[in-house]
Image (tube, rainbow, N blue to C red):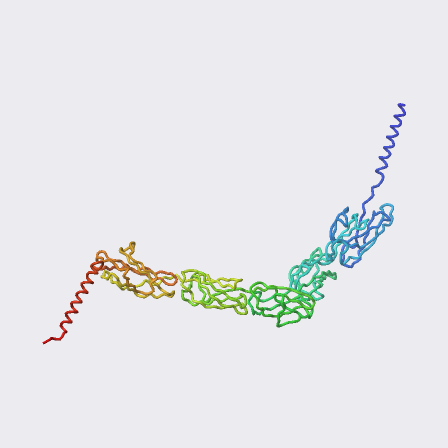
Length: 544
């Protein structure tokens, strides 16, 4: 038994050793390979595809894509853009290296089998092999499309387009054409570099709406790209008032077709071109119709359904004449004209001199403009706001009132130290000032500092004043006189300096009041009676 166990153990060890020797001797399967020849070419060129280590008898699919992926990725899951360029290629049997493939495809113009469509252009592309349709990638090869890419790919006439070229011969000059006509390179390289690449820029010339071909030719090789011209209009001016002439310049429209202009959705009459030229361009003018303030669309359409828009702003403005400022102010009583544009047409306009306030009314014309002249009312020095409104739209402008005080009046009566009556008379010279009317303030005090005020009269329109009975002054002496002064105030509330303090006194005043007055009135009546009786007696005829 002991020897049998030993024998079985030895036998198992021998078997395992043989297995270990056999397993490394079995070669591992090599990965699938893929090769394209040539590895660069133009759209439409035929490209050979070879590869080995494929499963013989299985279908193999070849894909062309602008997106890079790795072996093990999935066409359907990891790419968005691709084209199936070869279907159901079968590998031929090779004993040592597995099945070989040998096929070809033409570089496509478009990639349309994926989730997104894309035009093929110059640049790097990838060739993929799979066993399953749109399945797992088992081999990858790279391919360069000789050609150009442009950006942007669409825009109006005048767009500056950048062209990038790849895959061309090294160090050769570049010729650019637009629809077969030579076009200048405005910036960038005019020949390829040591890698056969270049970058340059062109400006899109006048041409009709739609697709146009940009071609780059280098040493016999060509690359093409499509640029889509879009319609565009420019207007001049871009803002104004009703009745202004606006010029519309259009590019990128149809070839010799009728063109129409619309303002705020309504067709307007035009002068100038009513039809595009062979390059899809035109220039026409129209008059701004009667509309209120705001921004409006100006639209150009043609018979080929090409359309483009621009914006026109109605100017709303207000101004005054003459113009005033802090450095050059106006005066009370000035005649000022307020003018406005861009208001509602044929609508009541309310003008307010807001500081006072004073309100005026006028009516705008059919073009939304107005002009109104008014006299500046009395108001304080400084900035004042003038507002114009059509109940919806309002505009403001400033009027600056002068701040120069009027001259100081010259006092006349009473004379300095003179005696005056209890109802004294005051007189001074007139003062003239641009901001009329000029008024005066008279002050009367019992001290020279005018702290004990006896009388103050404001707003006097005449350059004189007589005290009333209610204002009659009490008697004083020369040693304790009254003091008086006056100053002028113009219509802008600017006040002059006070005159110097004048002095006067009021002598003794006998006043008859109460019972004394009535007694004297009675005695006077009796005296008059006797005088009348005496006169009558002397005038009677004698009896002798």
